[in-house]
Length: 154
Image 1 (cartoon, rainbow, N blue to C red):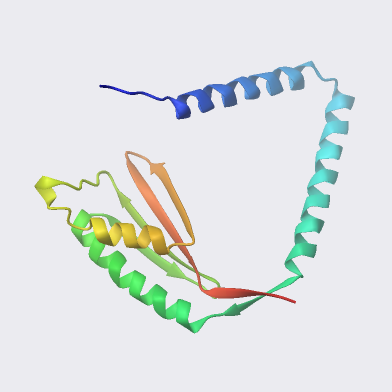
Image 2: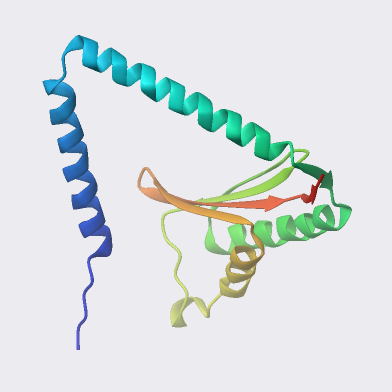
């Protein structure tokens, strides 16, 4: 039995259709209409930023030493995983976030590799607060972000 679902392909086609419609609308606009739309977009963006600023004032971020310690453990796991799957590794952190980036062209788990690194990768994926996987040239990058703070409502 073979099953195929082309969700990405369908989504990409719909996005291209929307882009084409927007481009056609822009090309049909007069200079005055275009300037009016730009002005409205800027106003909308400003309102959005004001709301975001207001929401952020409701919360205070406090560094959590336990999360910092957990991130140090995740770093060690990331180093072991990178070595095992032959990935490039970048680890960065600042006051609020820790980040582990792995870049590789292939990850294979199964009989030939005896699942080397599989549990480590799954642990990193589970523990990360944000995960971004994206193409990077002929490879792909796994970007894992860890929050090093707690948010408190003021």
